[in-house]
Length: 179
Image (cartoon, rainbow, N blue to C red; front, side):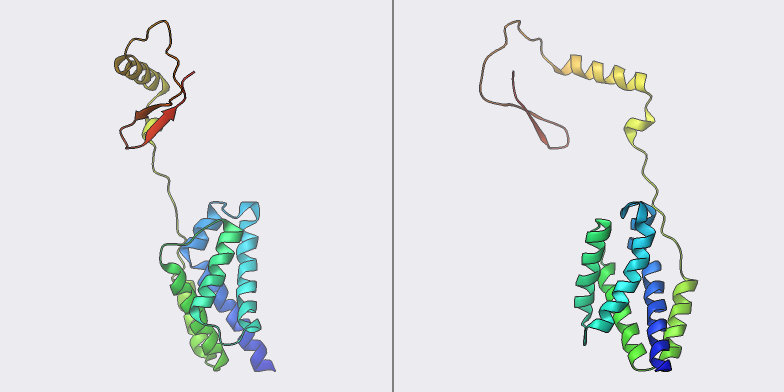
């Protein structure tokens, strides 16, 4: 009973190490994707992932991947599409198998390696071109662009039921309804 309890505790510690070193979860927590309780949700996620393994027999890595993907989507409004989710699911599945086989020394070594390589992922926002200009320049450019591209209008507007469309430089078409 003591060895089983130790294996379960060690597996929980390993799940925590894997999830805490996963950049996607770090970014989601650091940037508030999970709301004000993001860190608590990440801690809760460790518990439910390890419980998922103990409640289900013969889990395949793709099932674990789907479960973690659902957790990330539901709790952090995050869809993981960087290719790291299968790696995380595979790692957690591998560690669970090692715990079941009694290879606790190997699991401890993996936890130590994960904790040593634990660098926090940082996201730095790219400066926006509009933010770099001051407001006087922006207003001048907008006014200049508006006067140079719009032809003079007649005093009597035309009545049509068809929407007016403008194609912009980026390929998008803006549809504006005429009054």
